[in-house]
Length: 163
Image (cartoon, rainbow, N blue to C red; front, side, top):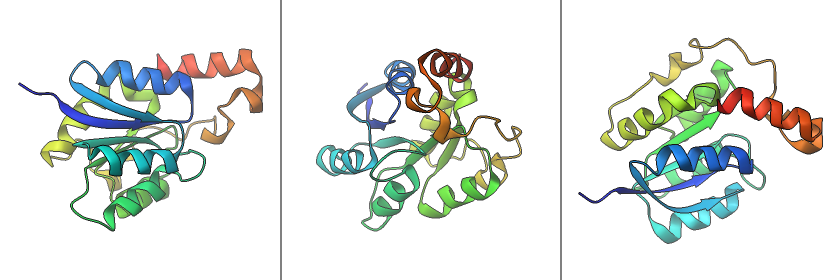
């Protein structure tokens, strides 16, 4: 059986590798990107079966990429991954066209299931209610870079969210 093809985008090299390692078991990762604009270009080039995007990326964020894809149907299903648990952000992702929203704190357990569900158009998490699963994170997604907090703290934070 042929694996479904997907494009993965995350501006954190550590998270990107984590996403790839989790998804490559059951999917064919055809391209990766570190920013939203590159992701959008790769999605248009490769026409994947599924797209997994970080919420906070340079150039275009995950919601902006999902919105751009939705303008030109048929577009691949989009799964947004984020540490952000604000219900308004989750709803904005849904309104932009994301089929699934996975909290990075739960990617080990939820990402593959959410990706499969997105392709099957069978919701894994009801997006409007998804934010009630976890309390708001104390670490803002825009504060998870070595530049913002130093390398040691960055590794500690990534380990906390990547497992």
